[in-house]
Length: 171
Image (cartoon, rainbow, N blue to C red):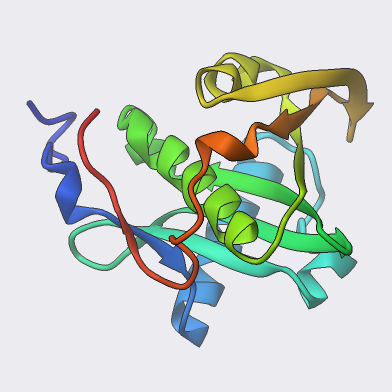
């Protein structure tokens, strides 16, 4: 089954660390589309100082187009954060894309010695993170929108995905 003409074979999608300037630029365009234009959380650009050292993970469709992104960074030794999770509006019905980005983000950090992985998650996305073995820690307002501070159960995210493409498979 495909959604609005999109390929249904999820093995044709790839989730990986961004490797090229083009992938990084496309991820930035997608983030602006989601967080600035769609959600109006930021005016003009969502870039902040974390982007100076964060790593970007991208989801690519079969044509190599960036259709999802998330960034990860180590805030303190062994304490990692994920943020700016975005999936192109046209691809949101493929639930495994968001989940694949989350899995790749946490597994990558876990492979680098992460002891704790946190994220501020928009409240409407809390159920998805619960299904992916995350725990809710606190509720707070962030950029005028309800968010939940959440923590990943690292045992659910095997080490070994670090620096290798994470090919999606139907669940």
